[in-house]
Length: 388
Image (tube, rainbow, N blue to C red; front, top):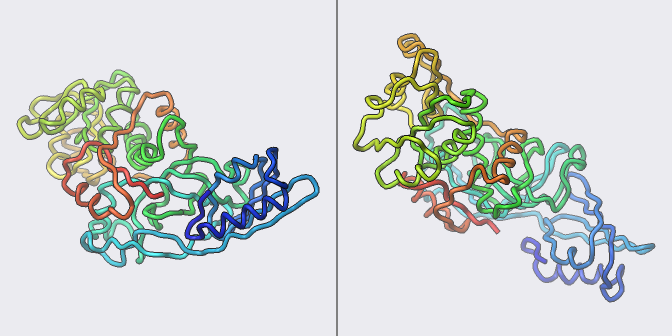
């Protein structure tokens, strides 16, 4: 058993608590009540399972066995997190002790086992999103997580229980997931895929939601349609290729020479080497373009669409003149947390219709190196971060 920065004294206290309730730690069923800052959870548990559990600091444990009751409170109100206190370079990323989050009535507290790095993280850190989203300092970056529920608000106790493995994406305007714990709305969560590790699961939420909301919600991509996905080897692109193929679309994508075989293995039907080929000269009559790079690629992409086509962009903005010139629709998308979409993605992952792509993995205290690799823009898929 482990508990954050409370160590062996907590284990000794729990053992004493058990001995008072269950002489000689005999096997059998216990009734366990965990009381935390946001509510409580009741569950049946055996002694060996209880000893393997991890408990969030500032949790009260009551163990019931027949007529005996023993109680234990785990002290401690801080946790480790990577914090930035201003916009700037990688040196802004500092490992600090911060106050433990409270849990509102519609939230759950998650012990984060893994997170991941997205380009969004370092773009926020460098101040590239100033004016588009408001962030308060000090700020914790990171918007993917996979972990275990440690506390539940009073309005969500029937949906998630302490000990449930979950994954999801928190609110982009609040503190993120480069931390040991996070409080997050239960509506943003889904059960963790049973066939994935925490690191694999944590690589999915932001890119998966981005691809789903772009291709399904906004793009309305249909079976038999043709879609061009830019930057197919990246985190969003690699997920989007697999999703589009699952939907029954014909998929073209742009990548560098070294990634051509990789995206073909993901299911791409036509691969364009953007360093040597002009995609606008080779593609025509497409129904959907998913633009993940913006800039000149957005305007060039308009020409590959048929009249009435849809250009979905996460890197550009609406442009009425281009829409009129090409008789198309340009739809900018900003990803939002959504538990129902996460459950749709969960089904695809557990049915192995989509697989995670984690090319590199680092510890939380190696986050500066992980940002450096992400900023190089020469990565396949995602960078996983082991938190604990």
